[in-house]
Structures are given as C-alpha cells and as structure tokens.
Amino acid sequence: MLEPLTSSTGLLLALVALALVAVAILAVRVAMKLAVRVGIVAGVALAGLYTVGVIG
Image (tube, rainbow, N blue to C red):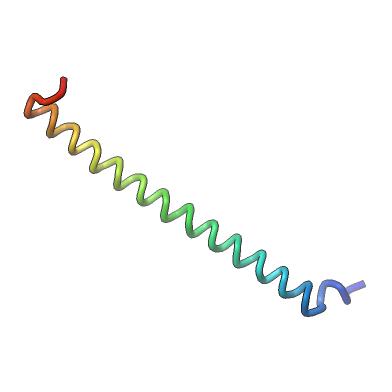
C-alpha cells in the first residue's frame, strides 16, 4: 500500500507539487509588496498634481 507513495515517481511528483506551492506563495508575497509600493507612489504623485493644480 505504501509502494506508490514511496516510489521515486510519486516522491518526485510530491516534491514538484511542494515546490510549485512555495513558488506561488512567494510570487503572491512579492506581488503584494509591489502593489503597495506602486499605490504609495501613485498617491504621492496624485497629491503633488493636486497641490500644483494640474488636477482637481
């Protein structure tokens, strides 16, 4: 019963799946940090344009 789970193919597939999950989690974390930074820059830029009188 444990043979399919401990065979090299099954173990390799499990390791690949684990690596994919880790990469996906890392990508989401990086994307969130980037989105926050872009939002801050956009807010500062819009505040500057509003202060100068270009918009508003």
